Image (cartoon, rainbow, N blue to C red; front, side, top):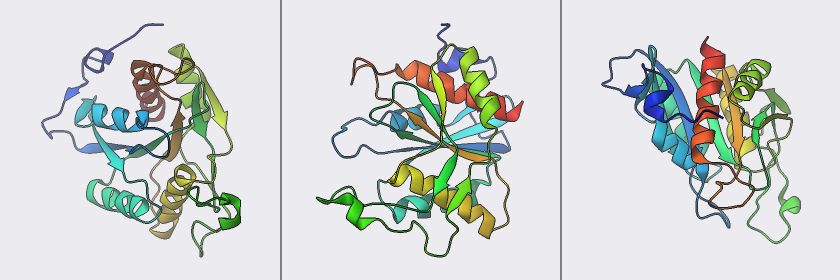
Length: 215
């Protein structure tokens, strides 16, 4: 596998001086539950304010909260009018990059003793399913070219990762927007778990997803 730093991934990728008109929005989450490190947070912070070709990458870390995370995402969409949205999150048991397909209108509260008893809709007025609007086959193919383990996933779970995917897609239908958007789960870092993945590989996977979508 060829490992590239952010600065060497492309001659055009560097810290931005806000001279790029088209925004790509990358979001991650803060640590949660038993995980004191969330790789998605590290990725979002590391790619923030970099540029690729004529695109400025904005990376933001969302709060781990069903109410404030979607609200922040809507604010970011309004502020930046991005041409692509890639949301990232940690899947603690994953061993590969997971490209999510569907946002499901169901959620649970994982902080109670019996989480499934709290099963409820993410959005009371929305449909049951929202399909991600990024190019899944092309993204998977591009990540595989980097020799990074990747698979398509049809379930983003019943927690906040699924909720932010669903709410962001539903918000676009409400506002008649058509920004390509999807959710990518990353495994734990290899410093967290022996079967985890390096931060460099995760960042390369995100870059590959961007290339697949904009090329």
